[in-house]
Length: 250
Image (tube, rainbow, N blue to C red; front, side, top):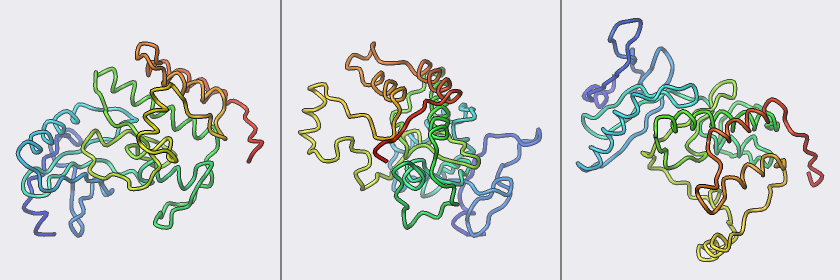
């Protein structure tokens, strides 16, 4: 066992088979194994006292989140450096990379080592969005504000199961421009577009029914925007009866 791992104080708030035993059964080369499965760790290095307190408060909050579309939290390590949160492992990684590799405009990333699943179909993409909306409905019911819902903060597991994760402790910022809606504009030009009420055009592969949902979320006045429960209901209806969309430009 790695000496650096041994000195950490691992805390696991879950009970297994009625016994208050740690979920982590053993370690291989310093990598925790949960029920013989890998886990994901979110680490925080060089933390000051204020950051440590924020880290601990978030960990305490995460222990109450239990939903099929929210990444399961196992525990924390707060003794020594780096601070670490331990979550369930999702095989296919974050949704951003997954979509880049398997979406309609897929760009296979050289560093990606995902099992090939082919290009995602419209029903599959609707299924993904409905799962995320389901997780957000749950968080909203607890008055929990995620603050940074994005594809990079959603994870993909076996069977195209998607879960919301990274509740504000993420320290990794993508250096690419994927998160810039108007990537061809400068910051000042983008601000001008927004203040003028301009909206992004409908993506080439996006059905009108989905674009209508997007526009419902872009209303300038907050009270006019769609609430997450309605979005979830609309998405479930689309999953059940996917719209027919012909990509004449494809």
